Length: 440
Image (cartoon, rainbow, N blue to C red; front, side, top):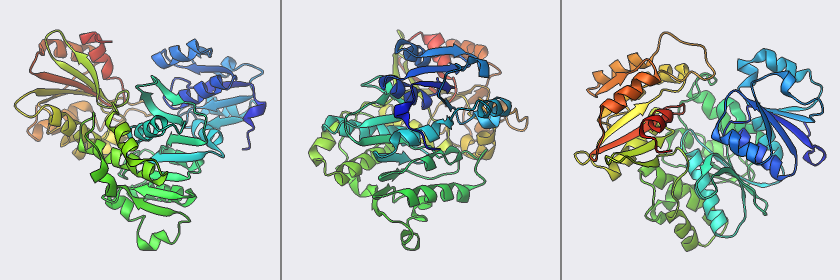
């Protein structure tokens, strides 16, 4: 669908509080559009959008959309999980676009640097953005978190550079036309949509075929290397660059973990490709302090316990985050307690064994009920079953039926100076720490 945004003045966003779609809403506000929207609950993101002038209503329904709206942008979850509402949207007689399609519209004609991969997209996007901003390249940026320096998921720049996080779910990233594509890794995930690893690889391959100038990839990832084989290279119209070549250029970082050193290598490879001074790029990346909900240090309790929040919701991410914490707090020096909320029945079920073995660097694991988001309940998998599997792996684990009982348990732990407490997951585990420790 061809959309000329210069001719559109009033836009309605369904699910406007989402971390990605809210960035586009911000961009439209900056562009002097009238922005309306709806979401099912209040949040700090919605509050900030209202402060910028967006008119947002709680709830979901066709009646919330102004009669004179010229474009509707909707969350990608709507067609599958509220098909009746989506059918009504289609009958409005005005253009409707999914968030990924709208992202394709706003990046059209830009020098798009797209960051893809099962893990590390957000941090790598933020690192690349910081280098470009610090070196005076004035990029626009859309990231799936909040950039600490801007307290926003959006930066509107003056140049043609556009750095964007490219999500693979439902092949969303195929709406983009990257000049430069970064691939951090490829693993099994989103198995509520993809059939298997091969299906996931096919989606990445399609995006690689759309890339105009350069694919910057993790040469240590076997699932990417299959796509960047000598045979496959003949299909691409662009060049390729293994960013692990730049690992020795990564300076001492402010954020811990081998995974962050890999993310930094990818960002430095982008700087090299754009002929940015190497020392300036290294200085910029050394000052990177992380993003919201990516191993974010929330504070310290009066008793001395250190509190973190992390978005990790895949076994590989859990392992990487706990390994990073152990760099800061070695075994024997600090006790690490994790409060984890599994995200989606389908993911927990498909990767059950990997989840059960992913907490080895934690001393205690507390589990909240599965955050089912867009899915129907599946009785064959549960946090209680996952807790038993973790215990079977000789780790200390316990599941709770609700948030209230988990809060009571955390209080009863009487965490002190020898403790690190981390809430983990893509759901709402962080709310327990917010309530118990009152650090927000």
